Amino acid sequence: MKRILIVDDDQDIREIMAFILREEGYEIFELDKGRDVVETVERIHPDLLLLDVMLGDSDGRDICGELKRRTATRNLPVIIVSASHGYHTRHEKNCGADDYLPKPFEIGNLVDQVRRYAA
Image (cartoon, rainbow, N blue to C red):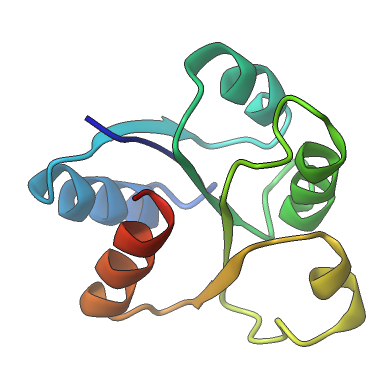
C-alpha cells in the first residue's frame, strides 16, 4: 500500500484529502505543522508528500527545498498545495516541487496527480 503524507494546517482540507485518498486505497499520514515534516518523512518513508505552502509555523516551499537538497529525500515526489495560485513564481519553482495543486482542488485532479506521482 502506497503511503501519502498530507501536511496542511487547515484541518478540514487535511480531512477531505485524507478521506478521498483512503477511499482510493492509500495509507495516509497527516501533519498540521511544518516543523515535523522532515523527521516524519525520514521515519515513515512516504511515497508522496502533499505539502501546503502557508503553514502556521513555516513555509512549505522552504520545507520542499530542504527535502530536495537531502540525499535521502531528494527523490520523494512533492506536490505543493496552495490557495495562492502562484506556482510560476521564482521561489516556488526553485523549491524543486514535482507539481502543484491549487486550492480549491477538484477531486479528480487530486486523485490523478497522486496516482501519477505515487506510482
